[in-house]
Image (tube, rainbow, N blue to C red; front, side, top):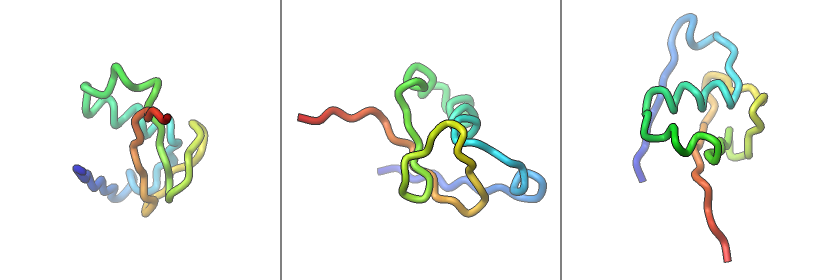
Length: 70
């Protein structure tokens, strides 16, 4: 598993952000994710995040691709 640690400082640390906004920024930074944007989900602090859920400094965010079960 690859890990990316994102840090925010000064005004960026205090800027309000939603899960959807963060996912948009991540997809802009890593364009290979763009085709999968609609199926990617975020978990914040171990719980599924809805688009409008806030993401705060110090939160742990997981990027979760679609999975198949059987």
